[in-house]
Length: 240
Image (cartoon, rainbow, N blue to C red; front, top):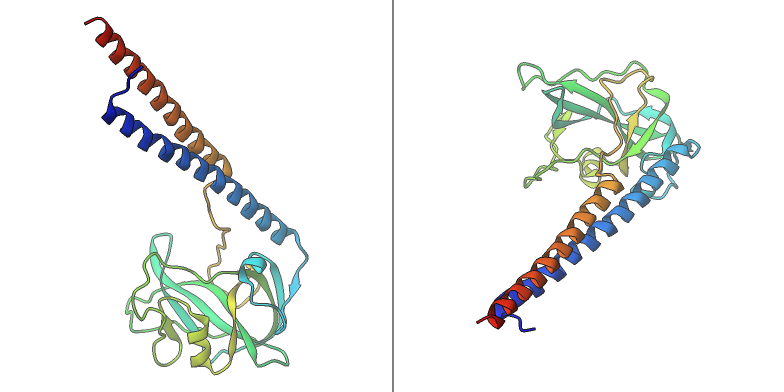
């Protein structure tokens, strides 16, 4: 059987690509399974009592339930701008919580609060009781789709508005060190705002497997069409 050069080159180029895409989706499926298992384990583990000696491994600690004793730094709070809830613009309120007996704090996300009609008027962020034992869960700071230059620089004065949270930058403004993660304040605790904490929504492993099957099916279809075309071409030549 003789094969035409151009169809053969197209086939040899497309087939490895389709197979590679299928293998990539299978790999992503395994990664997602491992990630979901880590989430389940984090939620099932006992409550962590946060101390200054805890390692800054946010991925390992993510979604862990945590309890902290200390005090809110009421005078120095941050507002994460451009946060949307139910179609309305507002802020997430980040309040430093200094651990008892330490010079280190963790940023507590106390929830979402709407913008004032006059954007220049910032919300009142008073707290009833600065000294407290708080509980919540560890998570990454809120992210943005596109990070603009200077978005991590907080505004002057207090409360300070920031677009993107960089804990090192905020620690420099505060004058004391911060953990590299936030605590999402538990819904049942006081001194919070609208709190609708969600676990990261990701494509399920089964979806990746389904995509892998589609890529492999395309590779098989391409192979069948190539063989059919080659046989038809050779048959046509033999009849001449």
